[in-house]
Image (cartoon, rainbow, N blue to C red; front, side):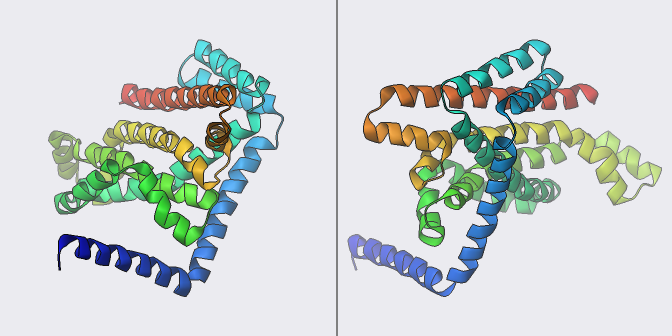
Length: 281
C-alpha cells in the first residue's frame, strides 16, 4: 500500500466514523445542540431585550470601574456608533457568542488548568495537545462540528470554545505553579489544610495569571467571529461573510469597525480587572 492509498483509507475511515456517530448518536447531538443554542439565545436575549442605551450605560460603567472614566466614555461612544450604523443587533449577537463561548471554555480550562498546575505529569500530557489546537487553522474545528451539529450557533460555539481553551488553561496552570515556595512552607508550618492552602495562598497568587487567561480567552473567541459567520452563527461575522459574498465593501468595513470596537472594549475591561488583581496582591 503506497502513501496515497494509506491517506485515502484514513480519510475514508474518518468520514465513515463521523457518519456512524451521527447515525447512532443523533439524539445525543440534538440534545447538545439544543442546550448550546438555548444558552446562547438566553445571553443574546439579555443583551438585545433592553433599550440599547441601557447596555451602553452598563458597559460604560464597567469600563469606568475597570479602567478609567475617559475609557468608559470612549466605550459608550463606540457602542453608540455601532447602533448608528445599524449594526446593534449584530454587535450584541457577537457579544453573546463571545460571552457564551468564553464561559464554556473557562468552565473547562480553569479546573483542568488548576489540576495541571499541581501535576507536572498532567501538564506534560496536555502541552502537546494544546500546542496542536493552537497550531491548526481555526476553521478546521468547524468541519466535524457541522457534521455532528449542523449549521447554526451551536457549531460556532463548539469551534470557538475549542480555540479559546488553550490560553486560559495554560495561564491558569502557570499561575498555580508561580506560588512562592516560602509562602507554601509558611502555610505548612502554620498547620493549615491542603484546601486552606489552595484557597488562602495558591489561588490569590494565581488570580492575576488566571485573569490574564480570561482576557486571552476572550481575544481568541473574537478571532473566531468572522470564521463562525460561515456556519450561520449570525452577528458581525455573518455580516462580514454576507458582505464578502455580495462584494458590499462598505458593509464589510462597518462590521469590521464594530468588531474592533467590541474587541477593544472587552480587552481593556478584562485587562483592567487583571491589573487590579496584581495591584491587590
